[in-house]
Amino acid sequence: QRVACFEKDVAMVSAWFRVLVFITALCAVPFTNYIWTTCVAALYKTKYNFEELISKEGVGMFAQRCCIAVVLILLMWFAKLQEEQPLPCPKPVVHGPQPPPVKTEQADAAPNKKTE
Image (cartoon, rainbow, N blue to C red; front, side):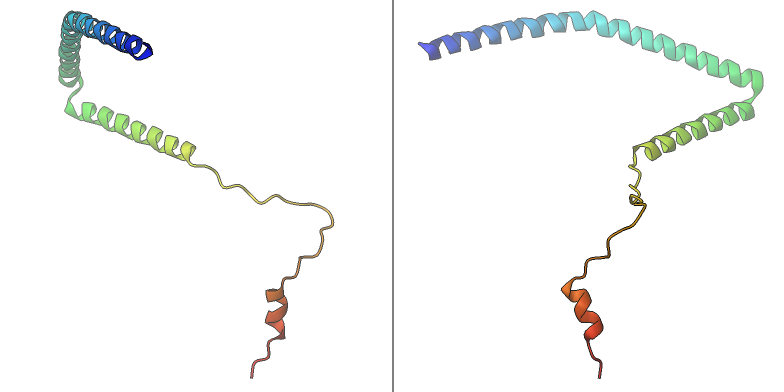
């Protein structure tokens, strides 16, 4: 009986999912139409502003402003890269008397070797 109940739930979710997809598709058509017309209008306005700027100040000034913008973008990108890199941890500085270094067998054996 539990499996049959589970199958009913899956069928119900599947039906609701289909209805939800259909309603989303119906709402998407006017929404995308609105977004598309808004973006195209903004692009035409931007194009008009660029043409006005170029005709008013000349191509050289426009190119200089573009170069400055590119340099600023690259500097911000580089600063972000520097921020993301972890800083190396410095060795902790111990003040005061310290114990002598621990000797190992390899360290003891190295000076006692005789070279012939």
